[in-house]
Amino acid sequence: MALKKYPCVVYRGGTSRGIFFHKKDLPVEWEAAKHIFLTGMDAYNPSQTDGLGGTTSSTSKVVIMSPASRDDADVNYNFVQIGVGEPVADAKGTCGNLMAGAGLFSVDEGMLPFDASASEVTVRMYDTNINKIINVTIPLEKGVARTKGDYHMPGIIQKGPLIKIAIMNPGGGKTGKTLPLGITNSVTTVDGTFTVTFADIVNPLVFVEAKDLGLTGTESSAAFSADAGLIKRMMRIRDDVAVKIGMAESVETAYQESPANPRIVAVAPPQDYVTTGGKTVKAEDADVLIKVLSMGKLHRTSPASALYCIAAACLLPGSIAQKVARKQEGIKDKVIRIGHPEGVVEVRASLTDDGKDVLSVGTDRTARRIMQGELCIPEE
Image 1 (tube, one colour):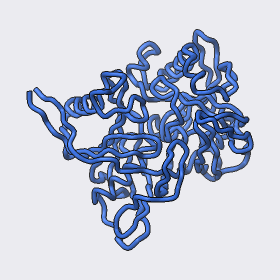
Image 2 (image 1 turned 30 degrees about the horizontal axis):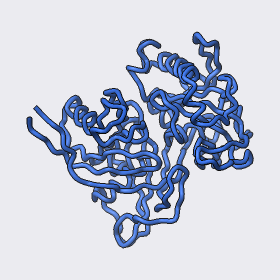
Image 3 (image 1 turned 90 degrees about the vertical axis):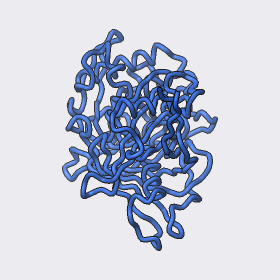
Image 4 (image 1 turned 90 degrees about the horizontal axis):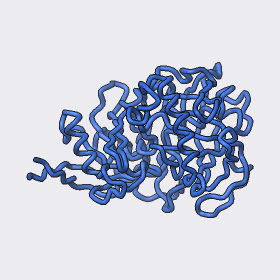
C-alpha cells in the first residue's frame, strides 16, 4: 500500500480550525478529494485520533483555495464541513470563522499582489459555497502578514492581530432569497407547533424562541447538552425546515442529506447569565442570548456564519430574533452584541435603505498559521 502526500497548512480562524489546501494540489474528482479529507481528519471516529480533527465540528473543517474565477475577486474560497464520528463531507454551507484564516492564507501564500509598504491589505474572496464576495482585511508588517497583535476575541485566550471581515449582500446564497419562507413560518412536529424564522444570510439558519422550547436562554452548556430530548426536539424543527426550503427530500433523511445546514438557534432576551468559564455577563452587556446547534450538537460558542445571520435578523422587522432582542426598531445599521455560552461577541449588520433586506454583515476575528507540511494518506 502506497502512501500519498498532499501539501497543506493548518490554520485557526476565529474559533475554528481547519486544513487548508491549494486546489491545484488535490485530485479533480470530488470522491478522491473527499477521501483525502475524511481520512486526513479521521471523520470515521468520534475521537479523531487517527487524523487531524479536534473532535468538534469547529475543528473538523477543510478549506480549498484557488485563483479567482471572477474579475471582482482575488481568490476563490471553498469550505467543506467534515463529520465527527461519521463520514460526512458537506460543502453546502460556508464557515465565517475560517474566512479569517483564508484571508491570511491568501497573503501568506502570495496569492495576490499588494503594496509591501502598506499597513494592511484587503483580500477580495469569492465564496463559492454561497456565491458571495467577502472582504477580509489583513494587517501587515514589513511586507508580510502580522503574527502578533493586541485584539482579544471571545473563545480564544491569546490575543492576536485584528482581522476585519465584511460580507456584502449576504442574503439568499443558498435559496436565492433572504427570507424564502417569509418573516415567520409555522412548523408542526410530534412535539407541537412552533413559530420560526428561517433566514438565509451567509448560511441558512432556523430561529426559534428559547421559551417555546421550555428554556430561559441562560442554561449552562452542560445542562443544555445533557438534555437529549431538547436536542432531538430542535433537530426535528430543523429537519422540517430543511424539507420546506428544498435542502432535503424528507424529514427522515434530512440530516443525512444536509447535516451541516441549516443550523438551528434558540434565541432569548438579554439577561444575566454565567459563561462556561464562570464569568457573569450582565443583561445590559448583550442584545440577545443564543444557543446554536451545529451538526446536531451544541456549539461551544457559535459558528461565525450563524453570528452574521443572527445579527442581521435582530434588525429585520418581525423576525423571531428581532422580537426577543433588545429593541432595534427603525435602526438599519448597528453593532449587535450577541451573548453565547463563552461570552459576548459584537457583529456589525446593515440593512438596505428600505429596511427589508441585508446590505452587509461583518465582524472582527483573529487567525493564526499553526503548521505546514504534507498530509499522508494511505492509498491502494
